[in-house]
Image (cartoon, rainbow, N blue to C red; front, side):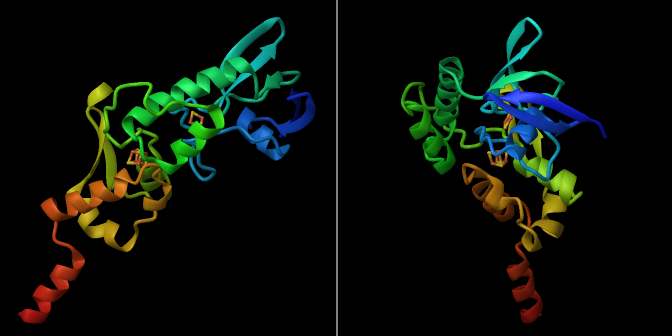
Length: 206
Ligand code: SF4
Ligand code: FES
């Protein structure tokens, strides 16, 4: 794979063709804030927290670094007033959905975001897709998925699959930035399928 040379925050960086700007920045020890990115998962580009400014030729634009591919001679800025303003507003919007998320609170502190700027619409899920993608891409089970679209979009466990797979896995739980996933699982488990422990008890009694 051929080498790509670019500049990130004034530093000359050598990346490999096919890498994203986020990967190139990380390889050079330059941190970019992220929320929906995970090193084991395909780039998703959902939260937009990882935006950066790029100059390619005479153009300057804001791009999503976790899905934007490196190019030769690209000039990237990961910090600027404009970027901080964009990240701040994105964090404020996400906080209206998940005001108690520790990760969002940490980002809010860093970017001076006001958790009360927008009216609370506490859905708790911020649609990062980490649980859905982890289950599909790594575990190949598709036990959790998105249902509906737009503002009505939410995650849902598929009871028939979850009843077979989730109790012994739960690897997606720690990935959720809001803890909503665990609550949704417990609810689905209670409503839609018999927990393994009850099954065991039922077998014992029989
Ligand atoms: S439940 Fe959590 S991990 Fe899954 S999409 Fe929502 S916020 Fe992300
Ligand atoms: S980390 Fe890039 S869009 Fe979420």
